[in-house]
Amino acid sequence: MVGSGCDTHNTLANVIPNMSYPPEPFLHLAAGIKEVVKAPVLHAQNIKDPNQATRILEGGYVDMVGMTRAHIADPHLIAKIKMGQIDQIKQCVGANYCIDRQYQGLDVLCIQNAATSREYMGVPHIIEKSAGPKRKVVVVGAGPAGMEAARVSAERGHDVTLFEKKAFIGGQITTASKAPQRDQIAGITRWFQLELARLKVDLRLGTAADAATILDLRPDIVVLAVGGHPFLEQNEHWGAAEGLVVSSWDVLDGKVAPGKNVLVYDTICEFTGMSVADFLADKGCQVEIVTDDIKPGVAIGGTSFPTYYRSMYPKEVIMTGDMMLEKVYREGDKLVAVLENEYTGAKEERVVDQVVVENGVRPDEAIYYALKEGSRNKGQIDIDALFAIEPQPSLSQPGDGYLLFRIGDCVAQRNTHAAIYDGLRLCKDF
Image (cartoon, rainbow, N blue to C red; front, top):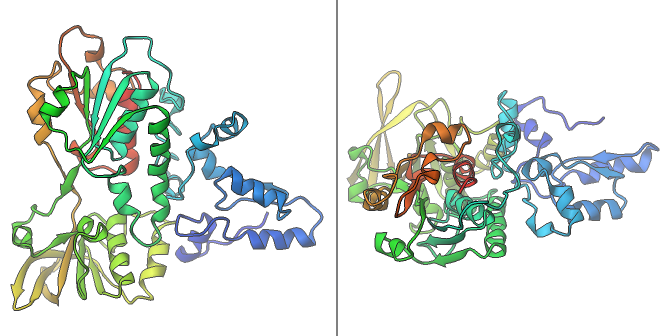
């Protein structure tokens, strides 16, 4: 057995290449070994596509391939190949949510397949048709939670309409894919696009559904997955209301042009803050990323944060920990960001052209409260049943009108995996 070595944080990223790497980045090394040994050679690094595997084997580069993460993403990969359902394979996107959790001593979960590792709990990979009545299901919001809710409901055999106010699906996945090294995450959305079309979901893009629009469809079930908005208003002294700070979403989505000298303040320390800093540096900006945690990106897993550091250090991005953004004010044509050391209280100022804040998500709740009182269940999810992977009791209770549920970021901030998990565990029993 030949490994690539992981004696430093930097080299650990080479062992399980994430989405910043090209396909099979070290195949040439395995092929070189095959040329000089008589034993069969198996190679396993970033081989995620059956067509890719076929090309490698038919080219004689190695004798066998390993596709571990590919099977974590879709344990039915081989069965789907045999049945000619290659387009239905949920292809690994290299997010490394699985391996990063394993290295933390946690269960191995997949960013896009919420059933993996939860089979023992009764979370299904294959969604069975409902034996009950066919229902009219309306899902609002086509981010990860909404796409999964619509897919699972359609697999159950229901009549599903999915509203999305933007001209495309994907939600924050689409935003994330615009950062350097993150484009492969869009593969999650591409799979959902194919599945929603296969299942004949009525997808209504560019439609900001309100209560009247939803109720006109006479739904039996309404699932709200409308997400939230960047939580810039948490600290009024940041000056979001006056336009003194902008969100990471604004920058990545191209709504706001990058400044020349930019301070990024990240309270979350996961992918978005690091992605927007990398994005800005890639555009030629002078960037300092500041966090009140011990270091930028501290919540990113061990196989993923090194690839950010590799990209950002050569671009001379300054990374500053233990500093809180206290306030922002304008001075002439510049912005002054006042930082405070979390431990000493000492203050520092940065004079910049732009301040970008990544402070997570605040749920959008207006449409929920517009529909709540008219719903049979008053918009309540039975949390005990949800956590136990059991059907919602309200599904079997008699009554007229619609049931109302909300999932994803419009309940509380969560990551892509948790949003998809919401959609699966709620809707599998519709």
